[in-house]
Length: 311
Ligand code: ASP
Image (cartoon, rainbow, N blue to C red; front, top):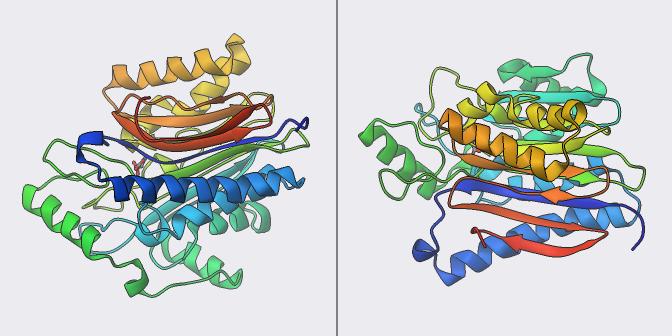
């Protein structure tokens, strides 16, 4: 096709070791990524907007129990769920962010409603859920978000007294299961969205980078759209998503050099994780400094790629 369109998604980064992955589990993740990618891609190909495409792709992943967002969100220290999400429109530089949600089925859609139907950018907790009700968004019961596997993770983290980034199979293993999407549509508009359950055993109302514009999510038609995953505290301190855009805008770097630079900075700070980014010619970068990152991409000039490890 000749229209410049493209999309990339992620399902989290971290210590994802091939040696510990079963063939069934691998197929399950690859299929889930492919489905979410296609949901966004089909929309873009038929002339849909990048905002719709990222929302569609993220909603698919939020509804999948294998990712740490929406249905598959991890447990807080109190055995609850506190989900964070954000979305950004690169054309108008508009954004919507939300945190501390416990019952909203698709936090990314609430972030979008905040961006488009409220006078605010960032809502949290009970207030955000009241707004979601006004917007007629879907709510789910506590059981919907319950999974035996996630509950065991919480018990393990509490026993070891650690705040865990998604699943940890061994004491020092980290795997981040946040989800995100970035896209470019036929009108040259870029958009980015990120959604997460945060960290297992988190407390005191901890909020990560996924809900923060400039840290975990950013989009600007002049430069790129970015969604991050990893140890959120480092992405907040590094202002990672905006930093990538700023390197392109002010230093004239291309997306490849700028992405590598921000991942280097992340490593220097001591953080781990990765990001997906797309520019206004649909060049896509998906760098990470962890063992793996669940990711997929496709564009008008590149075939579908679905990958987990460094290959
Ligand atoms: N960045 C997310 C957070 O810190 C975690 C993740 O990417 O899985 O909340």
